[in-house]
Image (tube, rainbow, N blue to C red; front, side):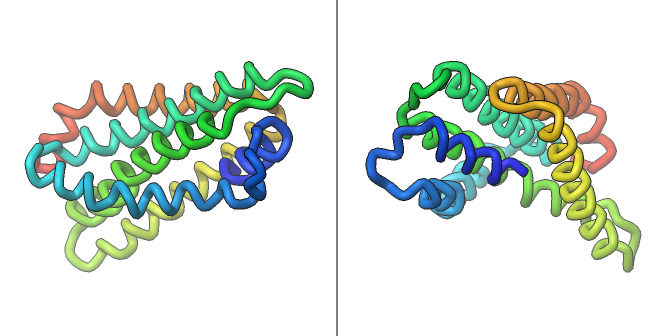
Length: 175
């Protein structure tokens, strides 16, 4: 859902500076590869608990969509916004994914009873699919900045709630 909406936003409201609009979708994987090593290095130096990483990922993902909402607010009518708005979106989104995905997989597997780790990892992916389905339903009722505010606000609220619950979650995960 997010990728298709960003693609449509880019096609209609972003000055792509002569770059084919479909190429903007490559920003996310390129940034993910670029930031993965950096974050792995940082995480070796700075110990963050899994719940703290997970909540950080949610907050970064939420902020990425709130940034897109700002861009959508500036792109009224036939006005186009700079490609840098998409770069900012993908920086935040890629960092958020790097905090969220590996940590979520790890959290899914660690506390699992013997022999059920793979099932819980599967549930993690099922939860991501359910989130995409919910986002798609939201997108059928909202468009533009309102959609991005709703998605960003939901992710930000979930991230802040998880941040508040981090001390208790650290006890549950043994961190």
